[in-house]
Image (cartoon, rainbow, N blue to C red; front, side, top):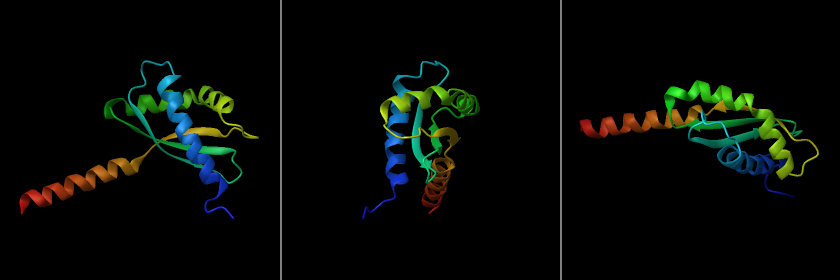
Length: 115
């Protein structure tokens, strides 16, 4: 038996491919530096959430809208690269964990400097 569920293994592969598609195939100049942090796929592999981190906080909402608008293009490119019966519908979301981690790091540094 495999150690991980198939959906977890497929999600990791999709994370790598979506990151490559955004970086090299998406030609929208409004999309800045985007990092794909995680992909969660349903057990039937038909729906997926792509969690991203955006370097420029000011353009975060606009970049998210652009990526969700181009989800069809990303899905078609993904279908050419990954051999699955169904290519999952993708929804892009902001990864809040990165920001929470940075906030915790700032608080720990503040405590350290106060001592």
